[in-house]
Each structure stands twice: as C-alpha cells, then as structure tokens.
Length: 179
Image 1 (cartoon, one colour):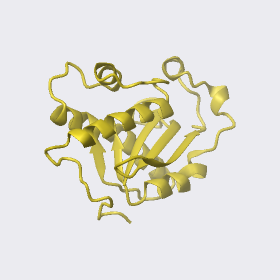
Image 2: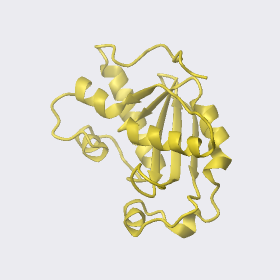
Image 3: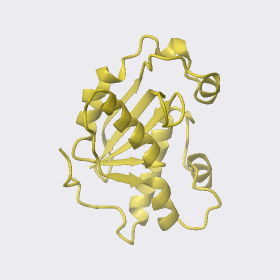
C-alpha cells in the first residue's frame, strides 16, 4: 500500500510552525482505496503570506480539529503503507513533528515523487508539482490546498508506477519496518 500525502502549514519546518490541512489518499498500486482530509486548527494565527498562498484563513480553522484529534486517523490510514509525497521530507517531517508534540514516535518508509520523477521521467526543466503537472497534462485543481495537490500527486504517482521499468518503486505492498 501507498499513502499519497499533502499538507499545508503555517510556514517552514523549523520552529513552532503547524499543520493547517492534511490530505491522504491510500492507494493499492491500482487505485485509491481510502482517503482522509481535514483542516487542522494550528492554535496560532496563519501568516498573511500563507493565507494568500493557500486561501486558508484563521476563521476557516478556528473550529477545525486539533492535530491531536485527527492523529488516530493519520496513524491508522498510513499504517503498513509507504508514505508518498512530492518533496516527501517536508510533509513527512511535519507529520512526525506533530506526533512528537504528542509524545509519540511516528515512522513510515518514504517515497518522494520528485526524486522518482527525475529518474523515471527525465528531461523536464522543473520538477515542482505545478510545473510537472502542466508538462504532463495532469489536472491540478486546488493548487496549494492539501486535497488538490495530493490528488494531482496520485495521478503523477500512477504515471510513475506505469513507467517504472527500473523497479524503483517497491512493489511489495507492505513495508517491513512499521510498528
């Protein structure tokens, strides 16, 4: 199994920045079999730059659940699956940081669609999600929103699966290092 993840945050990974939206699509290698999406109350103000970029404003998250309230859902849907994201370190490290604030260890094996795209689809000028989707005619609705970016990453990932003649994407559906 693979979980294609995208998050929106109040800023970069350093410091007290928090997740404000998460979307996860569970994929069995053929199709999406489950999904989870939620806005998240960061318990802090969303910087104006982030609001302009994502369209997510303080009033939209004021009644949203805290990460602690969705942690079980995130843990459950990603259990026994590869954590897949476009620039996986950003999304993974934020999720891991949120679990650390709950005094929990979170570990998943990771796959990065940027790295995979560079290997399996060489020759593009840019491998940013927006530019790659435009180059590959992948529909990207809701740019800089977790569900829109994650859905586009699902389409990209399915394309990468079809082009993986180098066996770069693990085909066993359950990584062995999970707890």
